[in-house]
Image (cartoon, rainbow, N blue to C red; front, side, top):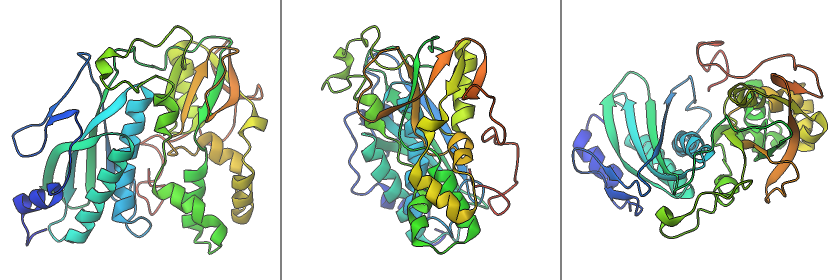
Length: 337
């Protein structure tokens, strides 16, 4: 980095990249210009800090880049919006190898493309550790946002995507176990795979001109929606509080035989990974009772009267999910999140 310099690195990062139609003006000026066809945009931001949220001895630069984009894209999609653009701020030491930066940006662009968007710009700064800050934008296409406040008593609770696999991967890394059976879990921890299409296809985002997409029909799509970043119980707890309801999960519907085999190898509890692990960025939502769920969605519980989240009618014990200012001080002491 020190030898190449900031502006040459910016050129290197952007050479050959193709912006999507949502980015009207990309890198090269004082700011980017991103389309907002229906007059609003969804925006979110998230940060990753070396040895707190990722480890370079566990993950490749490409993995880290994909993870940085995926966790932001999942938040945009969880609002019922189509990702349109990302802005990335990168802090790194002056002696950072250029190959690491190349890998990061390749991973970011690959995941941005998987989400249907591109990287519109960003910033570079010298810092002691590697720090990645991503801001993501999305288009609602004329629809109302899908918030945490829409759950209704009687709704079905369903999930799209896998639960507990990132936590299993972390356990596999920290146990330093050699079994080939753990490779899939480690991969899930390195790079989450949010099932964007499971949400976006339900919301009829396929029109060429998204400004013409009508609001979702009454009863179509989830009433409330979030992505599972902090843990299933914690994130459903946010829905329960925002909606003024209770959510009861069915433990039998949450079981994952493959995850249980991995837990047996590591003398761990697969159910705890599923309930509190987080960072898989699956989507969980509540649906009108009797609604035919789209492909990829699996029923895991129901919305009932009351407050909080229970499993088989009982308040779960153990870790309640991730909180940024609680727990280990670094990835060497606890889970990089």
